[in-house]
Image 1: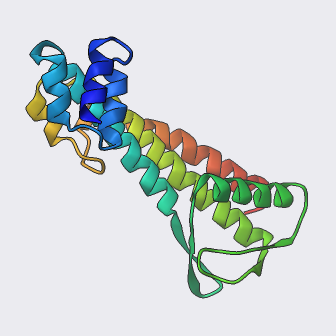
Image 2 (image 1 turned 90 degrees about the horizontal axis):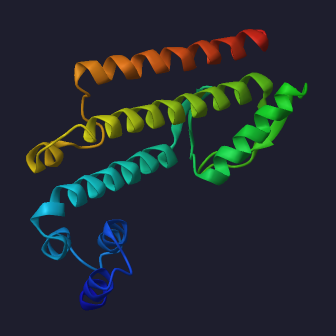
Length: 189
């Protein structure tokens, strides 16, 4: 596969993004790609690889989901796209006046959740998604300012952001929290 990817790059069937996808699929290594693009494009390639790496990590953290204390027990909710949709639909039932609805947490059995519990699930899910997405976007912004391979290599998903980026993230999360608080107030606490 390495030779096919090399041929495709050399014939301009794929560009840097295609090489990044090939790295992600395990068809070539990052070093193979650097050999193909040469030193003049190596940093741009490494930056693209890092951006994909943090995006994949962000998605994994989101999908892993959240734990909530409900009814005296810890309940885990996966946040795959399907589960996010299901939770949003549950919350819509509450918005429309529903007082309870059946749902199944990860590894659990289907049970009836109250409107208050459904709101807690929704708010926890949205807060988790928003926090991770905001962190990812802020980390991406930081990565795009880096200028050396060593600085790129030091970036990991979950690292503490430099102060100016952490402050930007905090501002955005404060807006999101205010909206979650407004939802809770609208639902009567």
